[in-house]
Image (cartoon, rainbow, N blue to C red; front, top):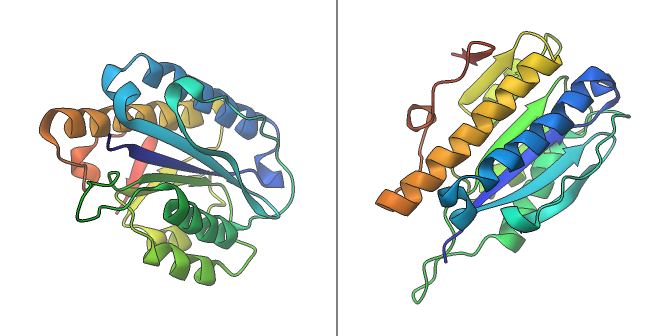
Length: 212
């Protein structure tokens, strides 16, 4: 079976403390609850969570929806965005099946990255590792006014912006992510086609602005 790998890269640095990190936890929980009710997603979607603060760690390896347990998330430290980009590249190399002459590998992974600040590590090194990885659609979300949009624009063309990093906007973002995963799963199951850009995904809600 060809899986649709989903990697969520979540900023858990100190500035996310309080309402933002609680909203992220609730958002991940809602995302999983929603996707578990979607027969297409249940068939194909596998989710991994990578968090980054003073270091980056893969808190949940690529896991099917039924076995997925939402990890405890807490906010502290700095913003190792480069570390997260390197880690997702090595995780994809390890976890995602490549297509060979005999078998079709997994679909290209969808990546959703959310940060509220600027990287505090060597993010360009991480970006180089990331650019070498075989990814599908990559969406970066700048949560609030302190997120560095110029860095995110170098990671991907699809950058979304939340004016505030509060519970209602973060919730809206995760709802859109789960709708996007559903659409991606359905395209694959029905048409054997993968999403290739923002136009293939549902329109983002009013709280989520597309940065052009």
